[in-house]
Image (cartoon, rainbow, N blue to C red; front, side, top):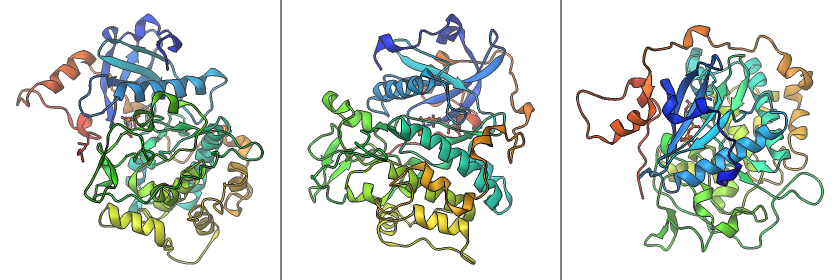
Length: 410
Ligand SMILES: Nc1ncnc2c1ncn2[C@@H]1O[C@H](COP(=O)(O)OP(=O)(O)OP(=O)(O)O)[C@@H](O)[C@H]1O
């Protein structure tokens, strides 16, 4: 996003005029605050990225990329299961933008609240249907999401879902005919080996061969990402940032990464359908299908192991199996995109056109979730305090720590 393409923020969206009610979450790049705006009489979520963050290379570029995706998504009528950009701005220190607040938390938190930490097939059907519609909307606009996981699926006040976090998304070139795809790239990537890493801290990119500022060579000459989580934006040189190349960057959250990404074959929209299969499996069984003791084992399983299903095969396990086809060209959704998945038996009888009309989604957030605290948090001060050496007089609240993961450099 260039500076001029920013939506001009309304004056009340200036960071110095905002007081946050609480920290909603912290991700690898940003801190998300709940902000109550008097003039709008409704709260919104404000994602704030520190430009100079020492933890994240090119945090500003990634933030701009996310804003630009959000503003594209908001340009025409916004999609009911995708966020729209309320406004964005920047100061010398921060880039920040506002999106609607989702009081229901994310699907991971919601799953943990269920008995046995799993959702019923009926609930899975509802959420999957909405996620498929959101992905379809992105794919039709040439955007591959690349970061589908329960933590990025938020529940709106209405109980419907919204996808969040677009900084790893990428533009692809549609095929001349049929479902959009990458142009094929004859150059093949070698498999990349990675040290073990925990799921919570695993979003990473291995750059396309020959590129990438943060790549380094290990003893075997294989490139590794220096940072645990470097977005594709930071990997691209300016000429790369166009839409006309197949991506060989390595992106995603370890347990959700598609086999073609690990193989370095270049990847396309089908990675989102793979991740949908993993998500569906996790919602059904409470664990992801290829989880190993460490990253190496997880990747080995992703490449070689078949998902294990418990009990009798049924429409849902059939759907998962077809989404988890290791060959992306045979994977459900590869040929005709979301339409192919919507036609699967698991969704038989579902009125896709009436999804938004469902008045009683499986879970409705309670209205009392928003407590407006006196005074609130001064956002600038919040970041300043983070820079101070740990003091017994001030420490982030549990809420503030919830998603605060440290990122090992390697
Ligand atoms: N609109 C929203 N409403 C409520 N909570 C939100 C909203 N947006 C984000 N959050 C919370 O903030 C957390 C971090 O947000 P987000 O995933 O966008 O940040 P990030 O830095 O890009 O994270 P990641 O590490 O996944 O890249 C989310 O997991 C979620 O808990």
